[in-house]
Amino acid sequence: MKTYIIGTGNYPIFKDLLAYKSDIVIFNSVSSLLNTLRSVNFSSHDLPDMVLGDLEAMSGDKEQEIRRLMSYLQIHAIPCLALSSQVSEIAKAKALHLGCNDIYSYDDSIEKITHRVHFLKSIKQYQAKAPVNVKREESVRLRMPFFKRAFDIMFSLLILLMLSPLLLVVALLIKLESHGPVFYISKRAGTGYKVFDFYKFRTMKNGADKDLANLLALNQYGEGKSAFVKINNDPRVTRVGAFLRKTSIDEIPQLINVLKGDMSIVGNRPLPLYEAEILTDDKSARRFLAPAGITGLWQVTKRGKKEMSEIERKELDVNYAVNWDVWSDFKILLKTIPALLQKEAV
Figure (cartoon, rainbow, N blue to C red):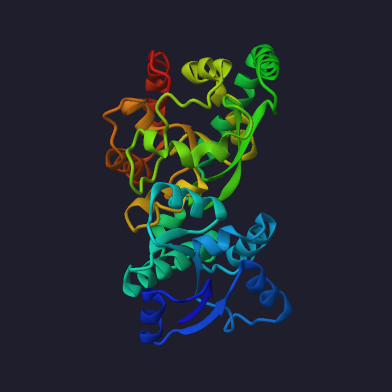
């Protein structure tokens, strides 16, 4: 196994790599690794199987250099794991913000890391439309039935036309309350891990993403390596934003995603990339076999309730992915309106 290391390499895990008969190349910074990749004409056999980066060493590099490296690694389906002396919530958020696929401590076993790398490589190849070990029946389920797609187009067009006056008023209120764009656009992972631009009305102060690492202790799903992030009484939410969230008006621009074919009206919620990267074990990854949707099974089952555990939400997502059909979508749609009328902001 060929491994590129960013940092000093003076930690126990690197010695274990040598014992594991790994071909190791050490770089003192992201920039030096990127320069090597640029200057050498690599074939697929010459590329590393993984990149292990010291979190502090990577954080010291320019952000644009890190983005270029992560883009290169993504194209070639090479996992990048961050290493830190302590895997705290802040360290996890920092690693995922840099674009790393996961984070481990210097004392973790190399067997644990290599197992994770093998799985991540198969997922990344799957993202690149080169599925690895995907059953035939699961691949077929990724195709959107004609009736479902036709309904999505007609329904989303009708709602957007009917609500266009309201949407203009909402846009004006957002601009009047706080500086920044009307829409919040983020990268989400949807059907089959397809990454797309996800649209919502902006409900937070501009630049709120930068404050996430300091608020993870408030996560509704608890601290630790949670796959979902939902902040209780999020201080970044504006007054207009709080109203939009409570009434779910902030979700309406997602109908644009439906028209584009990124999403369906009913499906599993598309996830931010830092959440999607965690859901790559064999069972949880099955949630991505379903269409990405605006509303879905877990929203109408226990929408916004504090007792909704992370495990329960995962199970509901997987259950929908395995069993969804037109009739189940219709039942979820019928339950969605009562769920929207709940008083709790979700």
